[in-house]
Length: 209
Ligand SMILES: Cc1ncc(COP(=O)(O)OP(=O)(O)O)c(N)n1
Ligand SMILES: Cc1ncsc1CCOP(=O)(O)O
Image 1 (cartoon, rainbow, N blue to C red):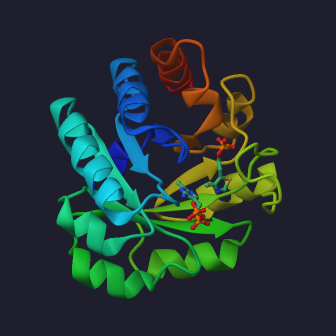
Image 2 (image 1 turned 45 degrees about the vertical axis):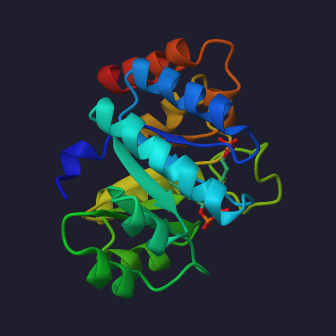
């Protein structure tokens, strides 16, 4: 996986929207320049998850964007997604890498744990995610990752470093200053009054960084 591709806004979908609203939101983010989308669907029944994944596959492909599936290796394969994101309880990274092959993107949640990130790199991850970076409206009780951790991870690890949790277009600069490659955002993007404009705002932050 080319590391250069793993830079920019990473739109992570809210899991409480009707399908058409979700697709309209993602289309708006893509129009604003977002090139990486994660389907994070915690609650839906399988036929609906599959329909969302297929629809997002079409949409992202039409925009030359990457689609990453959260948690679900089988769904990733079924819809021919570009990659998979796994948390600590979602399956073994080495097994996922072996099944996905070398080309697909594999991401790993590492919370605030640099040692877990080292292991994830050794297991074949293309990016490691730390967070929450700030208090998150989506995961209010999640562990916080200190800003210094991003800088340490960037200096030490051979893969892209992703930040997630409570990120806004206003607080993102501190993460970019620390060298973060990917900003994974739910609320600040999908609750924005103009999603296209908000996505473009993030892209400009990366251009300036
Ligand atoms: C890019 C990115 N980073 C972290 C997460 C969180 O994953 P996880 O800890 O497995 O929690 P859930 O998202 O499954 O609730 C993520 N999804 N994406
Ligand atoms: C899935 C996830 N993992 C850590 S924080 C988070 C949610 C991020 O959402 P928001 O951008 O709304 O804080």
